[in-house]
Structure formats: C-alpha cells, structure tokens
Image 1: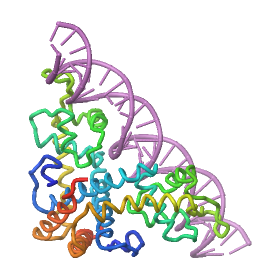
Image 2: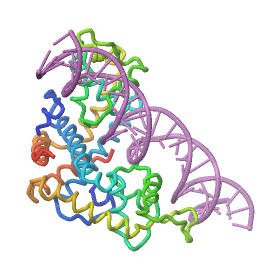
Image 3: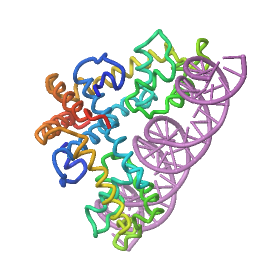
Image 4: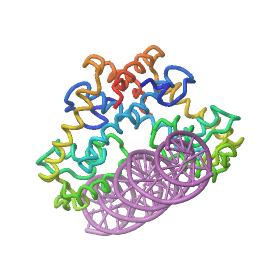
Length: 152
Length: 152
DNA sequence: CACTAATTCGTGTACATACATATAAAAAGG
DNA sequence: CCTTTTTATATGTATGTACACGAATTAGTG
C-alpha cells in the first residue's frame, strides 16, 4: 500500500519528510505483522527480541545491561520484560557472584523451544511477504544508515 | 551509526532480515530525535501527530474516526490522546449534532501556536540532521513501499 | 584506606499500544 | 415500525516506552 493511502494524506513538504513518515509507517507495519505471528506463542515483539538476544549467547549468561545494549529500542525497560519471561519460565534470573550489582539471565530450554517455533512463523514475513531482492535490501540498508549518519 | 554497532550484533540471516531490523531501528531513532524536540513543548510524538492532522483540516472539525485513519500507528487510542490534548486546551471536543455517535474535534488557536513552534524545531531534524538528497529519499520511498507491497 | 563518584538494577509514574468489551446511536431488513 | 446489525466512541487491562530516582555495589581518587 502506498503511504498516501495508508495515512490518507498526500501533502508532504518534500521527499525527505515523506521518507520519514514512510519509515515510521513501515516499522509499524512490520511490528504489527510480527506481533500477529507471535501471539500464537503468547509472546510480545519485545519478549521475542530478548529471547533472541539470549539465544545468541547461549549457553552463556548475560547481565541485564548487555541485553539492553542489544535491544532495537534503546529505552526498553529490560528488567520488566525479563519479569514476564521469568513468570513464563522462559528465562532464569540469578544474582551474579562476580559483581553483586548484576543480575544474570539465561534462556531455559522451554525458552529455546518456543523461540525456535516462533522464529519459523516470523521468518515467513521476511521470506515470502517481503519480496525485495537482496540487492534492493542492501540499497535500503545503505540509505537508512545514511539517514542516521549525523548521530542526533 | 551502523546497525551492527547500534544493536551490537553482526549475525543477520541475510540482507532482507537486516533491512527489517534497520527499519525498526531507524524508526526508533527518528521517533526519539523528534520526541526530544517536542519535550520542550510538553508534547508527545503522538499528540503532535494528532495536532498536525487537525491543522490539515482546519478550520474544519474532524471526528475521532477520521483522525484515527490518518495516524501512522493504526492502533493508536485516539480518544485518550485527545483527552490529554483537551486538558491542555490545545483541542476542543464537542458532540456532533449530525450524528450523535460522533465526537468532533477542532484544534484551538493555542494548539495552532504550539504546533507551529514545535514544527520549526522538528523540521531541523529533516532539514539539517538527515542529509540524504531528494533523489535518495525518493529511492527510499520506493523501496519501503515495495516491502509493504504484499499487504500482511 | 576512606571517601566520592560511577555503575547496575529495580521501581514508580505518565503516556502510549494492542486488543477486548461496553454503550449509544444509526442503518438495514423484514 | 420494530428488530437486528453495524458503526462511533469510550473504557478496561496487560504490556511497553521514556525517564526519574533510589539502593546496593564497585571503581576511582586523594
């Protein structure tokens, strides 16, 4: 769907302003499509993200700070997301012995199982819904990083 | 900043997966930069969006449904955003006489004033922080719309 | 070593999202 | 008309974001 239809507006100051809105809308679209798949597993987008991060280091443990540094949305409140994953027994939280300020977290085998099943469903979006070529995706990556070139 | 640094990961399944994360991260980056500017005016990103939508129709009124259809994030809870704008006297809410189910909303002159000041600050992001050409922005728009081609 | 500063994590609050449900009014169908 | 269905809005709940603050611990400095 064209942006103009999606937000019922065609008055953009210029292509750059339009690109800004297009990025925000596409992110929402992507997040919504993903969340719909994750719902069957009782996971939210952010809980899924934390599980993926933990699996990337498995069987190593990670402290809360390390997880936070890998989150896409940097202001995510990681302790609370872990609270919910812990209730569902998808992660285990223990105090660190090396640095008593730290809490270390590990993904459980139940967490790994649910993550693998969920990932199969989520990947459908990338493998069959999104139909750009690798080359186009690469061009997109370059443009997005150029937008963020001037940090802040 | 490169995505790899931003989320401290360089393991992407392919360029398309990476593009997905890049879109999500760029949207977060853009939203954060905007919110920082809006904070001086006591506005959130979403409140700003609603004010912009209302100004686009001014001096006409809009019902809640029309506003919702123009929001970028389609699940925004528009009645509650309007609650907060109403408390700050930036919009006026009245029952519709034509259709008693509807609530119609107008931006006040205070709302227009704050919106104009805020827009000047927000546009700095687009005019001087984001340094892509119009042609590049146009290419970006094409790619993003191609990604969303298969609706859902 | 003692004191200050910085770090790590948890928690509280305001606002927003996602979604289910409720309420009132309008539209549709017999 | 009267009943049923649909529509417009509001509200309730769980989760998440953004940010401030506090407690505990570690690091840094005189």
